[in-house]
Image (cartoon, rainbow, N blue to C red; front, side, top):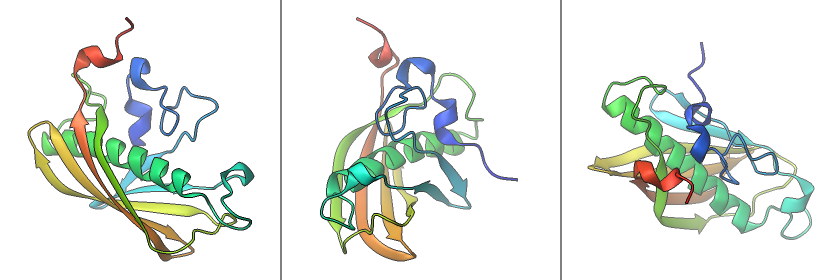
Length: 157
């Protein structure tokens, strides 16, 4: 049995993100799940993600690390509180800090795998470390400080 996809549990008012929103038809619509203690996202780059022929542009990598990490932060908070992901109040996180080190060019013709680990949960902040892999080789490493979103943040003005 596979674990639930984190993004399937985002409330509709905050499920429009370009990177991870299931309601954004033009976005990446990443899907993240637990595999043991690691969160995992697999993503297939498209031709428009080209930096130079044959390789992904770095902005895509940063975007994937960002959204993978905020989803991981939410799922980690549910785990931390031993609550199911569909329980209320819903957890949703935004990026307070994003750091990405590019280790090697990422081929555009291979699936990208992101593997995250929760480094720390402290109050309303979760720090997530992510390794980006292509064909089993690390191409980037990221760290995100994710901050819990206030419930009013997704409300329409």
